[in-house]
Amino acid sequence: GRVLSFSEVGDRNGFPVFVFLGMGCVRYFIAFFDDLAASYGLRLICPDRPGVGLSDNVKVEEQQVLKWPEVIEELCDIMSINKFFIMAHSAGAPYALACALKMPERLQGTVYLVCPWVSTAIANNFKWLRYVPTPIMKFTNTAGISLQQMLYGRQPYATKPSSHRNSGALASPLSSLDKKQQLGLAILKASFAENLAGANNDLLMCFERRHAFGFSYTDVNHPVHVFHGTKDERIPVSAVKWMEDEMPQCKLTLITGGKHSLLLRAEVVDTIFKSIAVQLHVEDEYDDNELNVIDGDEQVKQQSKKSSNRRRSLPLKIRNSKSLKFNSRKSTGKLKTRPLFRRTR
Figure 1 (cartoon, rainbow, N blue to C red):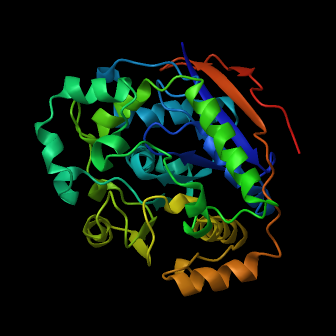
Figure 2: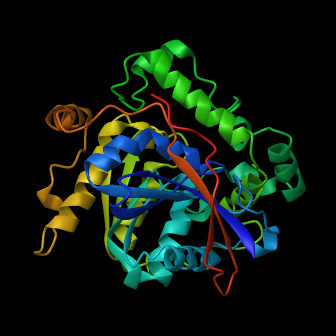
C-alpha cells in the first residue's frame, strides 16, 4: 500500500470538512484556520496529494484526477466518516469536483471553491506554456524554479515584510506581525523539509499534459459556490463566470480587489465556515442567498466586525499530522500518528 499524509485542525469532534489545497501546498497550511474552524464546530482534514508532504509519490501516468475520489473514499472508510464538506483552492478544485462527480452521496451540501483552477482551454490563459516541452516544465519545478516564478518572475512567498500590513492576508488576532510571520515561516520550513516532488504532477495535471481531467466541470450536478477575486492574477474572471453560466448549480461571489491568495482572507474563510454551519443546523431547505455573503470590500469589513466576537485568536501551533497506509483497492485500516509539531503557546 501507499502512504497518505494528512493533518487535522479545528474541533476534533466536529463535522468533517476536507480541504484540497493548491499546487504543491502542504497540509500544514490549514493551521491558520484552527480556532476559526473550532468556533464553528468544524473538523478540517487536509490530505497531501501523491508526492507532497509525506504522501508517497506515484508515476505521472498514475496520478489522474478521477482517481482521487477513490483515495478520499478509502480515507473516509478508515476514519469512519460518512458525510463531509469540501473546500478547495486553486489546483485543488479539479480534485474537489471529481469527488462531487464520483461520490455525491457522501458530500454534505455545497462544495466551496476559492479561486478555482479552470482548464486553460476555457480560461484561455498561459497560452505560451502550451509550447514548453514537458521535460522542461518538470525540470524547472524539480530544480526549485516554481510555477509562480515561471509565470511571474519571482520566487514563491517573496513578499516584502512591510506589504503584509496592507495585503489583505489572514486577519489573525495574534498579538504581533512577528508571530504571524513566525507561523508562516514554520509552515514553510516544515513544508520544504518534506517531499515536494508531487508538485511536478500537479503542474502537469493543471496543463493536462499527461491526462485530461477526464470530465468536464459541466458534468458536475452538485451545488458549487465559487469565491473569486476581481484582480486574480492567474485565473481570469471570465473563466469563473463560465463556470457560473455553464455548470448546473454554480454560484459565483466576486470579491472586489481580491487576488489569487483569497484563501488567506479571514473574511472569506469565515463566510464559508458560517455557510457550512448554517447548512448543518438548518433542517429546512438551505438557501445560500439568505446569508449576507460578501461581494465587495465594504461588506467584507462589515461581516468581519459582526463575527469578531465569536472568533478566537489563532494559535501558533500545528496540532498534529498523521500518515495513512492504504491500498488503492482495499483498505488496510491502519493509522500511524506522526506528531511533527508539538503544541506551543
